[in-house]
Image (cartoon, rainbow, N blue to C red; front, side, top):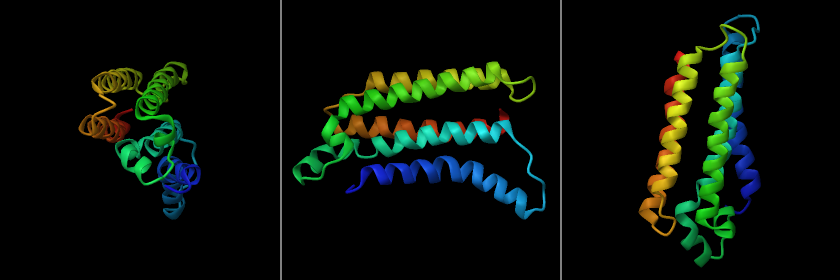
Length: 163
């Protein structure tokens, strides 16, 4: 909490890029397999890096009142729950739109376009509905909103083997 930019960059880098791109290619190397570019792995690393950045920004949403009371300055306590949640929602919706666009412009066979488009469109609707239901003045509502962000995070991994 004391160094939010450093924490956010660490979360995004580790959970987004290293966990996906790095582990995949390190495993291939350990198994003696040659480096082969994988569009799905590159997509997942990019998508999840953006997603992890949103998680890093929204993790303090439910603690805003306590952080302000304790004199702890976080992004959420400075900007407010409603603005941070709105920004996070916008970034995730753009991330879903980019996923759909990626599948459309990718070379034939790089992705299963039907699932990629349908799955990410459904996730975008799910995110938009979660935002619409959010009461930024209610801690239970904020916690539910943040929980939906995590549910969608895991939904992406559920879709991944099929894209």
